[in-house]
Image 1 (cartoon, helix red, strand yellow):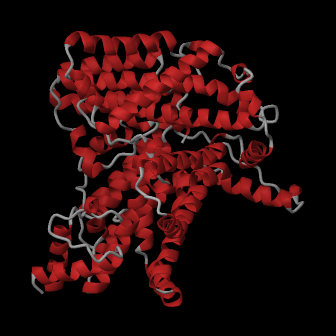
Image 2: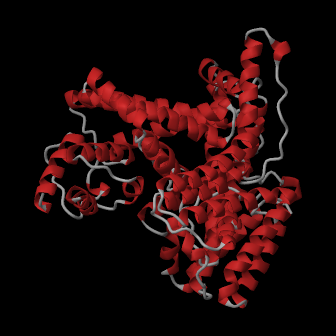
Length: 511
Length: 81
């Protein structure tokens, strides 16, 4: 079975799980979910690799038990350290050791010492390791900080770590908020189950109709960027922004929808991020659970270490209160953004595109905002005008697209070459001479893509005003029927699926 | 220190951190009520409050504190000790 929410086999698996879930005694529901989650992990081709999440749960369990038995700070810290070392250690070895080796090799070849290159390792990396590691680790830190109760039952902890809707690409869970509902009895609730399924349908629309179409254009240009210079790169990058967003947020709609049909509510990961007015806001609306995790478990603890507190004092003395504070925060943010970037994968293209570039944006924003405010005051421009807000949204979208070039390109060097080509080659004629229809989508396909994006835009605007499913629910039966079946048939007719389009890979599943 | 005094001092700290003398906080004030109170300023605010009252919040308190009332509760309980 492919590791994929959109495959036919997965849907059969899901239907069977859902059916059994509601006919067995409610006390057994969580045990059954654990069983289904293990089966899912095995079927997704992970086989023996299931030992990784099982071992992670086991180590977490030992840590939690050690902490539960004592108030002694030293012992609690040791218990915490045990998990941190093993969980982060596994992540570093499996995901980042080659990053170190490749970087050293890169430096060696730059220095002309290619004969000293180190051979990279080949590991089989268990699916979803970055997600389950963070969900589990966050929980252990919370227990250490005494804001979550230590779980006494190993199997319950294992379910939290391996819950199948969220193990492959998130959302990253938070035990203190999401944990207990996994083990509570869930009677069949018709509204909840239909709402969950509706959300899944919406996710399928995003993934199969939009993301897969965008994928064709993106692949054509990104895989042969020397042949597609200038404006082609801009077009393909905007397509990639929508591909990545619909793919990742669509897979979240499916994951959250599936979970809702079990009566379990997972945290939201997206909140129409492309409507953000600045980069900080964008990160509060894009991959929300990663941002929250990084804030709570990297950024805050880092700023509260003795080293940073002392540094802060020194910088404040030297540069004054305001600047000193700013410099300390910028430094901590550098480490934070490096971590966010490398979390995706040990590759400079992610470290730059999803990390340090955004650090640069935020720092520049912080430094330049007072300056721009003064200019606007002098020119008498109303800084809260709607036009200006629209411009801010466009600017933010443009800036994140630069990051996406790194994210999608084969390497950081390719990304740099593409950006050079994008700004140095002037070929706007391709926008009107029909060349765009040669990239993988002909006229009809392009129209379908644009109409689908328009639907996405309208629904996203509506979402900002409140839950869309509830609005539809208030309509009369024939209208509801029409909306949902129209969407379903739209997906069936226009979605890209089946063996010949097995490209419905979830991009974030690789992390 | 009475609760009123704690709030009076908190007002000064908030005004200083957010550079806005019009800010007054009460029991129910949350990050949503103060425009600049984002996750970045939260940690600066915490440090400023700690310095002012000569106390320390635990990491758990830093991330779970829901409003200024809870903040005052923690301050009161610590400066009493």
